[in-house]
Image (cartoon, rainbow, N blue to C red):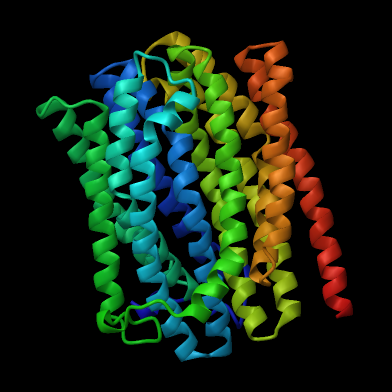
Length: 446
């Protein structure tokens, strides 16, 4: 397994960024494809109400997961920095802290989420004909939070060493199982949205157990020893300091998406189903964007730990160019095949027509989104993640919430609602570029 590690401190940069980012993007895309299988199976074998029930939970689940995924990114940065410093004790303490914290955090979210699940869906204006299935889906999904969080923290540990292929392999195994379980629970057992939620929980259990076993079999600094699993206060503090703002930044997107999803829900089941199908397609481009952002964070983190700041700057520049170019190309391809892709989820022509509106607005602005990810990722690599979080909160969450309660209220159409995405991205990207340039100027003076 150690052969899969990438040397981030020496040699070329561009090819290593690709070796890191592409398996990471593939991991996210496959994860989303397996999630899309949930929507496709219920859309084809149950109906559009079940499809809407699964789709209506996407923003809620994203909100619950993204906060801890951000802290997992903090673990990535901390372990990467210790790796650059060749501090084996610091790496080991951070690894064992990460594993226990992910499990405890997952249990806490499960307990809290189960209590407030009906209130959340009611606040999102989920229609009555969809509500029971949506609630059953969310309750079952919440039971899997401990293993979902564990998988994300374990993946962060591997990625801190430049290994993005091992989490990908484990995801492929569990994802294939997820598809078969979807079909089994829905087509054989006769379940609906609750069946695909159960399949998701079981498949995540498999992927987290596989990574846990592989960490226990390592013979390097990230080796996991069950007897040493405990919370180390200094390691946790460093992870939270870097990861919590990153998690809040991700949660901001989810909060604004919940607000938008509530507006989508008010437009009826057809719009809900169409938006859900389009989301499961457009998100593939986002995983490319995010993978280069995480690559930038990890590479900058290791090289900053090794005190090689000029290489950090080159990493940021190369990451930005590659991310924007590749994202623009992939977004263009998805747009070309947009309607046939939406048809995979549901054959209704009306749903395809509505879904393509969302695809055009989202994918046309993804290159701008790439700029946001790289600027944020670079600053997180240096250990400064509060400023990107604040700017994203103001630029993304603020603009979208105001838009929903003003512009959309004045013209309650799906077209008007989707316009908020490119508007919020352009404003936030400009602010993040200015913040990064200001940060680097102060950094050079210091």
